[in-house]
Length: 483
Image (tube, rainbow, N blue to C red; front, side, top):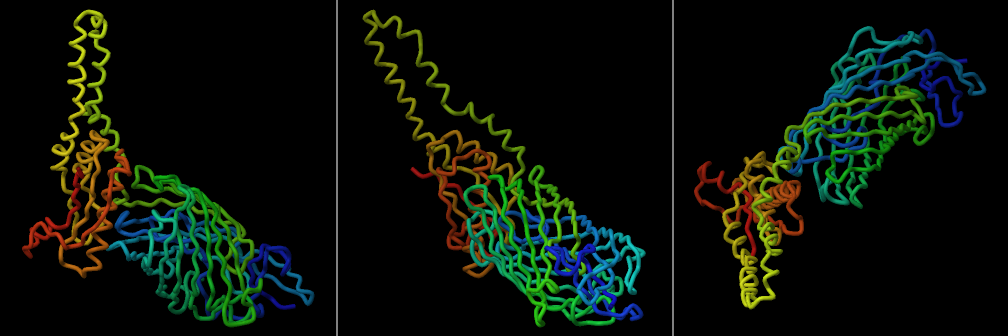
């Protein structure tokens, strides 16, 4: 019989869905290398889910930070496999607690940059086969990522497509199985969207390029890692305002380049059920739990996740919405109340001729021209350079209150940009700004059917000067009442 390092919870190789993957090495072999045992890789900060990405961009927010606690049970076992492929062994790492610190930034509405730093906080178990739990916390390899939007918007459209990539920078912690010895890279794609109002979905596919390595002397064969095909999918329920999300996720990986591809000895499958919720549209809390159905070293039989995230530019604050009822008295809706005047009773008298005045008074509906004049000077919404969102809450509140006072009015929401970028970029940025303002007005109670959204790029500047003050006037959204 031969000694092995495995992660199968004590089940025989190939029994059911729980899988033990062996690393062939004698008990006497010395540890000469290592790799990151922690398999969970969080999505960028600010996303709805935990493991399957659906990227966000500057039209929703520009910055997000998150802290995720990650507990794994029974992540590594060691033992022996006899000639009948029967495994007997004991746990090496029974409990593992890690933290992931994540940052994300979107400089414009087609690019998202991210950074993830894993920290193994605690491991408990018993050393075997020259591998054991770490004795003190270890910082892992930082991951730098980027995502580019090709088409659609994952938070607004039924379908969107994105390209993404990531690079892991080794920091020399392979002996503590907290990182790899060399650089890792991943290239991939994501499809995602929201359909049928409350259905959120996403699929991911990519290839992880990784140096072949093991936790013991050997660097090839069962129990080692290398290049890997990675797949992921999720589906869930999302509230209409995207504040709440709940649903299952599944991630799958299999080694590439040898006969273990798509075999149990070289594949892992993990499922999670998770939920996230945005508090006051700024703080996100989330939790998820799941299991490893097909397991290699590093896949726990149970995983639990807790997350807290902060995103200062997430949509609009709900407080202004509560101020909206105040403007309602401005509506002439009270005028009709005088209709049941006591005048109708005297009607039997010859005063019948006085009845016509009420109809003459009824043309109080003639305030139709009033909306046009009143809505002519709706506030302009200003934006910072290259930004698709704004914190001009006061202007948005005033505009929403006045538009709601005239529910029959049609409003053109027209986005503009300055002339400092390429024409295509400016056009798209102006459309993003217009969409942001339209969404903000809708969130404040304005009917979506009364808004017409468009962008004109830098083609209609308020000022043709090239000073920063002049260009600042051109970075705007105008609200124009249609006759």
